[in-house]
Amino acid sequence: MATSCFSNVDEYGFERPSNFDYETYEEFMSEYLKVLAKRAKKWAELIGEGKSLDRSITIKRYVRKGIPGDHRGMVWLAVSGGEDLKNADPNLYQRLLHGPHNEQVAEIIKTDLPRTFPDNIFFNNTVNHQHQLYNILLAFAHQNEAVGYCQGLNYIAGLLLLVTKNEETAFWLLKILIEKILPDYYTPTMDGLLTDIDVLAELVKWKIPDVFNHVTQLGLPWAVITTKWFICLFAEVLPIETTLRIWDCLFYEGNKIIFRVALTLIKRNKENLLACDDFGLLADCFKGITKDSIVIQCHEFMQSIFKVPGSLPGNTIAKLRAKVSQERAMNKKSTVQR
Image (tube, rainbow, N blue to C red):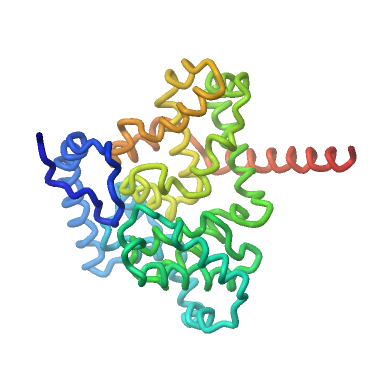
């Protein structure tokens, strides 16, 4: 029986599933390690020379090609505006930790800690990681009382912590994500999330109309298909390194990256989706497309998300959001009037 040179636990502490395809992964890594070495050298030269990480065509190109793991926390903070926020109030995180705290919120967070990445050795075997995650979520909940704490935030904050290895950095990145990049995704009404799910449906209708018509005909709600994609930002949906490459672009380019990823997954699996002739099969197929062979090839996949969906201007997304929001408001009004 062939053995693999790779551990059954990845570098971020996630246990690989029992059916993990080590052969395909080794084949991919034999090439991707060369890419990583090249990118690491490029970033080391950039950072070592003390060049600015301010937003620019060069930095955007570097980000799209992948940020080395050692630099992710620093670069994410710089390109997202998180560093500016932190510099404006450098003691905020420590003040929030010192309270006062809402005990009900604290207890809800404590309840969710053991449920966060149960297949990750750092969260399972290291009390320190759970304590740091608790601090991040508690501080954020008291800083942003409109959002507070809701399920889904633990996965995002947990992954930020695993990547940055610094709870304060993870706090500021969480703040940027929830308040700037994903507005109203995690509020009690989740208006931003529900709007963007409908926007994705409109984009599928425009870009891949036969899939849209098929999904509509079989009556499968888009929220059933894609809520986890949006709420967890593909964490626990796609392979970890692919997810982090998506987050590289997310921190620089904003949440239209989520639409690019979703459209790429759907378009690449168009024939399989159209072949499903009932509700259940179609739902299972949508779950399966996140295991498409290309998703483990993170470098190739990230190149494809900027090609497969075609043009996706920010003003087009803004217009669709306005249209969807107006329709949602009218539907609410008519429901109340009834």
